[in-house]
Image (cartoon, helix red, strand yellow):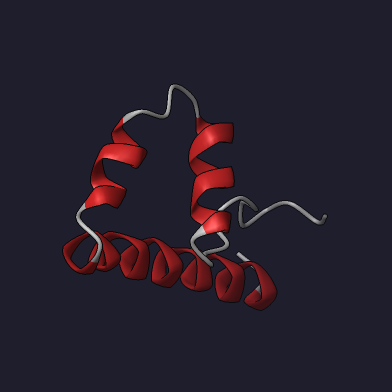
Length: 61
């Protein structure tokens, strides 16, 4: 894994961890997240909450 890919991977993991922590502060988010039926909806919801989880570590764009 190239350094840039590692950096992207770690950033995404951090964003996911922060998103999960936010469920404790905003309990309604848990229900919103549970209502998603695919990955695309989860990514869009996360983005609306201020988290960037859509780009995979090997993707260039």
